[in-house]
Length: 196
Image (cartoon, rainbow, N blue to C red; front, side, top):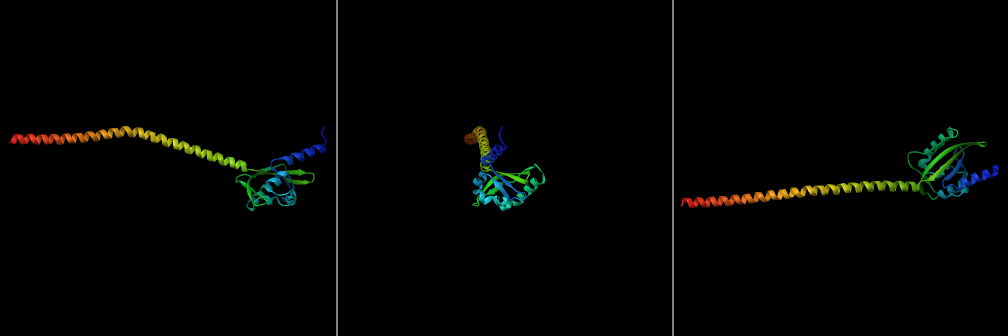
């Protein structure tokens, strides 16, 4: 049987090994614990973040949304709230921003209620989403190009016989006009011969 201490140590190791930034904050948003990925993602050390407001990891424009998310998580025991709608950005120590997926869960412990926050770097997801959108646009563009080429081919196939008919009609008109002039000239010559 595994001892409770070993289970606790294993859980801590799992949280540390996560590829997501994981944070534990008090109800007012003060950071109490962060995992290694939080340090990597935001370029802060643990010592720099512990005791700070979770808001330091988000640009100020997201602070009202973060407050609402935390309020919703605080309101319902065992709840988990996910930031939805617009893309949320995190802000690194150097001021650089990157897209995030954020969820906040309420955890009731013997020591009190805490907020468990998970932040996933969505850069690769956004990149893949953009590439997919571009691929769809390219596909649609190629389809329109193929339709255009088909329409041009059909128009050419229709225009070729029409051009032939038009040229033939023009030739016949010219020929009949020439023939009529010739017949008129012949009739005039014949009439001159008859009057002499």
